[in-house]
Image 1: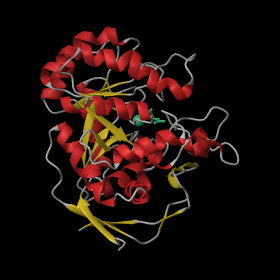
Image 2: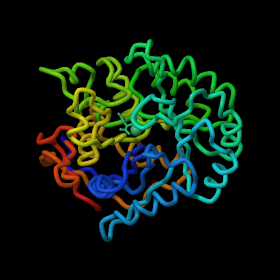
Image 3: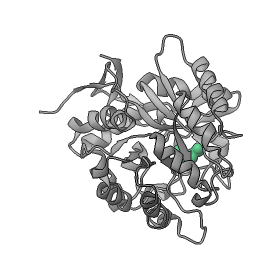
Image 4: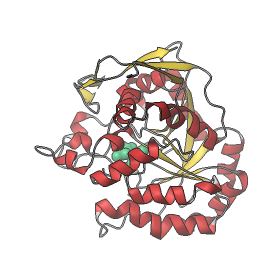
Length: 351
Ligand code: NCD
Ligand code: ZN
């Protein structure tokens, strides 16, 4: 018997880029329509480094919400070499920050102010471990001599493993994992309860060959870059396992069409328009729709020490056409992942 209707607790998105200004206004309704809460990335220009920046950004997000939509933005601090442990801890204790994000300097979009060497923030990490503040990591080395497809695996060995040893009680989320190496590492540390990993919809659906199918496909370029098929299968295995450390984080990362379709195009896939429908396809292909709720709605809140959402949402088996483009402002648009294609599932709102 095939399932035609799926009711799950309202999910949360544990990794989103909402941007600011006109872009925020254009993309926020998509995330807020499907998800109850979201961990909002701080890589704005300039980045949100202090609690005051994050609180002001949170107010702008709330102000950009469509009327009557209940959505809770959970803010993050952008760590730099100069982050002050006291300011950070105060922001966490006052409820402004839910976590802090570590971008190795120049690893990805708007990460130029990121941390140049993890040793430089040892006192900050010690403080975070003391107060139970999660560290969210973009796990790629920035050494350009390391092959781009190996940067996550090398980061795990060279940086993440020693970091966990040095800070035995620090809680860590390895963001947007893309390799079998990451899945194995997270599983090996699962018993400690202090490591989590987000998985995007696009990394469950594409491998690196898709980026070059019939020509170069800039809208499938994101960081970390999609890896070979064996890695995609490992991610599907992890996401659909129901295991506690793996949870939903779309890493939806909108850029304008002009910024994507360029000689040096920006990294990021915009999946927010149909995030849950995309995850549903990946889970169905793996014969694991019954595990979607654990991944999308239960494992994340458990890691963050928050209650799961009480409300239920409905997914129905009927075609959804992904919008061709999302207009941002006069002359500026974002192309959604699978733009114009038909998906098998539809998000039907609250139960
Ligand atoms: C993100 C962005 O555009 O902000 N890009 C991406 O490819 N995922 C940054 C990030 O999460 O690496
Ligand atoms: Zn991201």
